[in-house]
Length: 131
Image 1 (cartoon, one colour):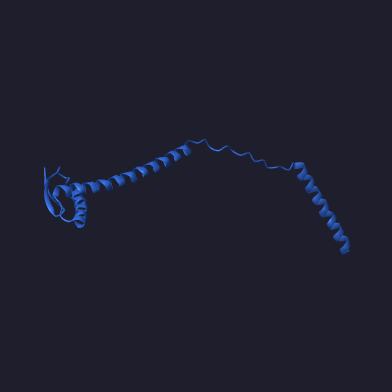
Image 2: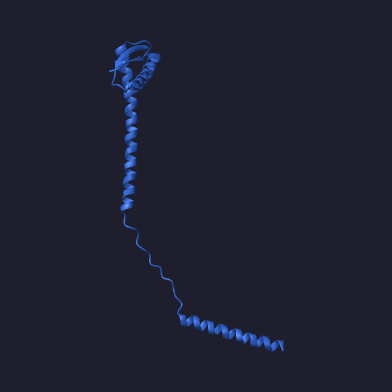
């Protein structure tokens, strides 16, 4: 089991960890050291146990806040997922019936015949004027 030296609040500690976990331990120690540095800047030198306790509590507070935000985001996501699932499972909208009026063929034929007669009459009238 590897031994890792970490520094928190200006004090050095030797800590054992699982092989391959050294990076995570260093990262956690860095976060704890940052909180301890804030305490040291605000209060000055404080006993080691109190410094570690306060720095740990400050990190726990930040973590709790992040967990709350994560939970809220997960709840919003779950609501959106439920809404999406509801839309997917909803029956398709009913088809709308649209009626288009159809002109009967005999009416079209009659109109074509009237148009042809009108054109013939117009040619007759034009022909008699020209001559």
